[in-house]
Amino acid sequence: MNRIKKVSRPAASLLALLLCVTLFASTAFAAGGALGADRNGTPYTYVIGYMYSGSSQTVNTREIFTSPNNYDIWLCPVCGRDPLGNSQGTALAADLYMPCYGYDIAAAGGDMSIRYALVRHRHNNGQLSNDRVYIPVNVPMYAGCYYGYDLTEPAGVQVSAPTGWQRDSAVVRFSGGTDTGTSLPDWSAAPGDYGSGIHHYEYQINGGAWTGCPVGDPTVTITAGGITTVTARVVDGAGNASGQTATAKVYIDPAPPNVPDITLSTEQWTNSTVTATIKDNGDAHSGVARTEYSLDGGSWMTYSGVLSIADHGKHTVSARAIDNVGRVSGTASKTALVDKVAPVISKVEQQPNSGRTEMTLAVTATDADSGVKGYAVTTEEKAPSPDNFSTDVPKADHNGVYYIWAADKAGNISAAAKVNVTALDIVPPVVVKVETQRTWDAEENWTKVTAQDDNSGVVAIGWERAGKNAKSRHAPDPITWVDSTAEAAFIFTENGSYNAYARDLAGNVSEPYPFIIDHIDKHSPVIDSVEWDKGWSQERPSR
Image (tube, rainbow, N blue to C red; front, side, top):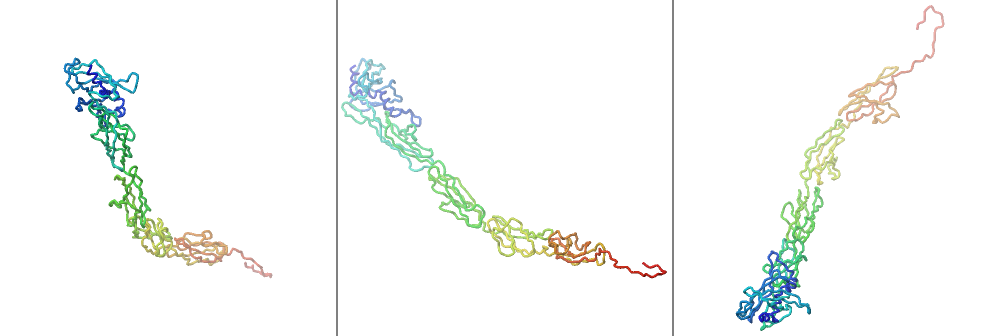
C-alpha cells in the first residue's frame, strides 16, 4: 500500500498522465486525425509516453498503442522500489519496473477540467493489486518515478516542389518539423523538453482528405494534369498534428498543344508567289513555347513570320506546335501550287463543217502541272488576257490567218500556234446564163437559168419578181427556190422583169441576174373594119 502511495506521488501523476490513454486519445489523436495507416497501408503506431526510473534519468521503455480508447486495457511501466518478499507479489529490485493496468475517468464534482487515471499494479507473477490509486493526469506532480507525456503539437513543416510546368509528374518533398513536450523527468532534475518526436508527415491534395507519409519516404508524386495544391503538416509520436502547414503548387502538363492552323494566300494554282501564315491554337496547360514548320518534308524550323513560296511546283507546308514542357502537337499540312511553266500547243487540226461555213480548230495542248484551262483565237500575234480564254473549242468563220493560244489554270499563256484557214466557202455562186422563150405564146413562157460555184457547189436556183416592192434578196420569202446543182427551168405566166439567183452549199447567195419575160400574148386580135366587093360576080368569094 505504501508502494502504491509512493507511486501516486505528485510526479507520478505525470506518469499516470501518460497512462491516461483516454485523455491522450481525446486530445492528441483528435488533433492528428487518428490516421490508421499511411499511404502505403502500413498501420501507424504512436508512442504514448516514456518512463524514467531512479535517478539515472534513462529511458527504460516505451509503450506503443495503435488504437487507444478510454476503456481499453493497456500496459504501462511503473517503477517499483518495494523490498524483497513483498506480500503483494514477487518483490522487485530498486529501479526496476512492473506493468500496470489503468484507464482515465473524469473528476466527480469540483473542477471538471481535471481528469484522473485509475491505476492498479500487476505484479510479475500476474496478480493484480487490490489497491487502486486515482492520479490526476493533467496536474503536474513530483514522484520517485516519472512518466513522460506529450500534448504539444509539432511545428516547422516545410514543403518543396519543382517550379514551373512539368511534363509528366512532379515529386513534392516534405521536410523539417520540431516537437517539444513539457515534462518533469525526476525529482532531482529540472523540467525540460521531452517531446515525443516527429512521427510522420501528412498531406492533402487540393483541400481533400489528409494522407499519411512516413518520414522514411517524405514525398508524394503528383501526376494529375493542371495545377495541384499540396498542403503538408507534421504529426508527432503522440499523434499531435501541427496547426502550422506548408503549401506548394505543382504544375503538370499531360497533353500536347492543339494542332496549329495554316493559311495560304491561295489554295489554287498560281504563277505567282504563295504566302503561308501559321497560327497556333493554344495549349490547355503550359502554353505554346514555339511553332515550327517544315517545307516539302525538310527539317523543322522555328516559325517567325509569313513564309513566301515562289519556286515552281507543288510544295507541302507542314506545321506543329511545341508547348513549354516539350510536348509536340499533331501536324497540319497544306499544299501550295505554283506553276510557272506555260502550256505547249503541239497540233491544231482544221475541221470544217459540212457546209464549209465554219472551221473547228481542234487544239492539242499539254500542261504538266496545273493543266490546260482553255483556248483563245486572235487575228493578231498578240496574247489575249487570261479572261478571254474559254474551254470551248476555238472556231473560225472565214478564211484567213489565225493565232491559237492555250492558257493553264495558273494563268500562264502558251506561245501562239499560227493557222491559215483556206477551206471555208465564203464566195457566193454565179448565175452565168438565163435563157428565155423567144416565141410568142398566149399562156406562158419558159426560162432556163444556169449557175456555177467553184467551192462548195450550187445547191439551189431561184427567181424573184423585180421591182420596187420586191424584198431583199437575202430574205427567203420573195425568192422561189428549186433544188439544182447547175441549171433549172421555170414557167412564167406573166410578162415582167425578174431576177435569177443561185445558192451554194455554204449558204452563199449569188448576185441577182435580171431577165425579162415578154413573149406572152394573152390578148385576142380586134377587127377594126371589113371591106368587100359590092359588084355581082359569078364566082364565090374566097374566105
